[in-house]
Length: 106
Image (spheres, rainbow, N blue to C red):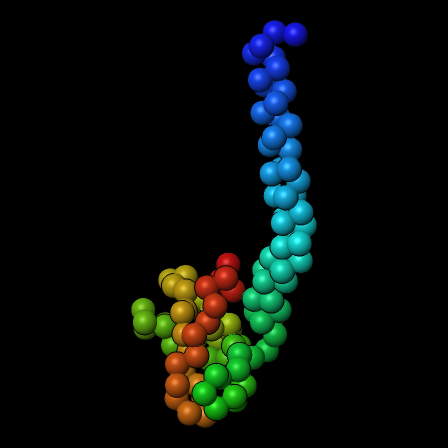
């Protein structure tokens, strides 16, 4: 065997545990990543967003007024006229800003 080939073989054998550890970490982390990406879509498919202050349910479908001046019926996530994306809505009970998750937006 050539000395260069022997060195390459030694490097591959030394890096093998690193690849195995990375693969194990990916398999352990995968369910948490999937759950984190699915949760926002369940909120957007739902009917309401919960206020973190008073725990009231605020509907995401209804009549909304955009900063462009348009008043429209539909979801609060995006204006139907200018396609501006909402980042928050006011709670209907206490008036606190309820932040909308940016991952909900199309």
